[in-house]
Length: 230
Image 1: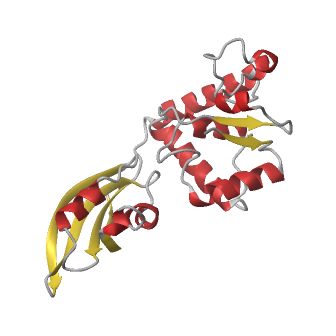
Image 2: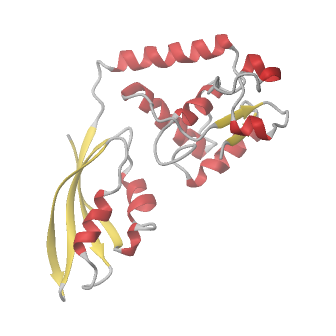
């Protein structure tokens, strides 16, 4: 279902977006998509750090644009002014210049809400310029060693490792692993991973992915054993 935001240049609009991002890393789904670009482009400038969640999200999307770009389609998002929207608008975000004729062309979806054509082109050119300039730079990477602990000696460690490796994030690469005895028949999984610093937070990976459903059926806790810049 499409998400709708109103007037992101206002304090009230930013507050709604901040509340929305409190428990989310992206506007929709588990990876950056064109929904994030829609909202990103609707913001005239970087938000104040006062809006903690918006600021975190904006910084991440900005870094992503500089490094690899965004290709996922998303679920659809609408950014409006103060006027209410119809069910058709939720299903198919209308073009800013063709709001009155939105039913004439259901295939022509404007991913940038109510932006003018000039604003849309400026945003695209800005993103392209920043991305091109960043090709000369190398993003910082880190090598991390994690201890992943099961609930007890009856936990299926093969399924535990499969669950851990099932987590996919942009900028995350799983490496070698081994099972290490800790006593009383219990073993822990020690696993290496490489991350792109601008894209992946290890704390977020642990708190929001590795120790939440459904993976917490196998994983009791995770500890960072080593963290080294590459």
